[in-house]
Length: 332
Ligand code: 5AD
Image (tube, rainbow, N blue to C red; front, side, top):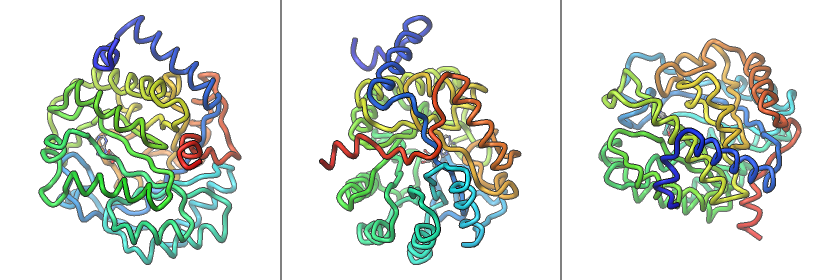
């Protein structure tokens, strides 16, 4: 069966696909689920992506930036609780010197792997971040369909630039992650199949359903159930296409089904990103409506995530960096 058909599997056949992918994960990356503490350190953004709740034009939210001290406290929480790895995420346009200085301080104080998720920079700036000690970088392509990419981004955001950034990140030496949104209005199953072809060359992937946000121009009616199923099938197929890749069970899945993240783990995902942003800021970092965990504390999220992992018979891999085995293969 080809990818386009596999993506559309339902019922028993879908269950079989997910089972096979989980088994494949066990054989290739084991039954560990790695933690990445997600620090959403600023919702300031210079971009105006048509789908995103923190886009520049959204004036319904309070803009915030954590102080360096607050960010270091989040990192400390992750270190103390053996997450072993953090993700520094923000809107786009962070000052490069601030970022470099921050990375150095975190690396001096805590033995943590650092993933950055800050958007598009020049190759020189990526090099500075890498030299400061960050090991990983996430930059979603959102969709590999160039025309669709153009429709959901403002004119100043160029598909080719995005692709170039991903190439630069690899050349600099990062473990590189990308991802797509599943179920963007106008996206076809063929598009998703092509997305998989692109994503299988990454070291890490995070993808989930597109969830409308009221405060954006793209707030359209969508088929949640279909996007949920496609997202899980994407995870399963990606695991089969790229056995050693790290795949995140993303929070967006949980908007559609309370056990969405567990379902992704059972379909072959092996990474989870508990939010560690201080609770008082969380309501202002909603990329989409009904984002889970907004009213929880970092401790709540830790317990909740650990239980979710255990509930599906997998191992919460605290104390392990969980570097991408795919990356290790790639740079050998
Ligand atoms: N629905 C789902 N995912 C979204 N993101 C941004 N807005 C939405 C939305 N409305 C995702 C994008 C981005 C990541 C940080 O969050 O894929 O790269």
